[in-house]
Each structure stands twice: as C-alpha cells, then as structure tokens.
Length: 146
Image (cartoon, rainbow, N blue to C red; front, side):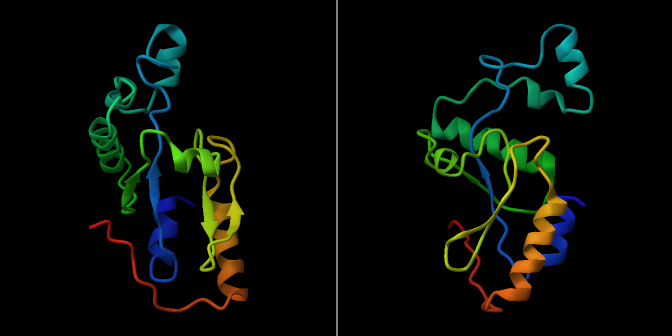
C-alpha cells in the first residue's frame, strides 16, 4: 500500500495534501552523505535528495519542495510550511507523519513518526472507518492554492 494507491482510490472522497516542512538531512545539518554510513543510507535515494542545503528563504524552501514533489510522483499537490514552521510544530510532523483530519477540523488519525511509523495501510483503515461512520459531504471544494 502506497500513498499513490490511497490517492487513486480515495481522491474523490478525501482531500489529500502534502506539506513540505523542512529538509530532513541537509548538507549543513544532519547529513547522510559522508562516510560509510552515508553510502549505505543513500542506496536508492536520488542524489539530489542528499545534496541539499537547509533553505534559508521561503523561495529556496519552495524550490526544494518542488524537487521533492517531482521525485515522489504521488500526484498529490505539495504545500510549503512557512520558515518559522507553524505546521510542523502544530502537528509534530518531523520527520514524517500521516494525518487524517475530519470535515469538522478535528484530527481523526495521527500516524506514528516516520520512517517506521509511516503507514499508508493504517491511514487507509482510518479513511475507511471515517467514511463509513462520518456524515461527510460527498462534494468538497479542493484547495487550489491559487
């Protein structure tokens, strides 16, 4: 089960948002690029993902988020957290989290911290349970960001 699979199955019933919060392993931070550990950790990770400095401006952060969105190819639009990280702080989003927020704005499901707690299968179960029990308007207005 992948996020891509979930999106394909539920995009007409659930609004999917991806929010880029901060670079997890920037070259000028907790970098995975050096030494033997870096070589082992980077297997299967695109080179560009390990050669990024921590953005210092919103424009830089948007650029990195765009690269991330392009490489993941989920089909889910990516939004960018502000430089003072209000979304990351509010949702304890580091390093990676999945949330389901109900139509009333309440958190219905909060996944565990990634990478080990990142479970699209558990999110699928939460979506199924929510759709089965909640009175959800069958038509929603997608957020366009325009």
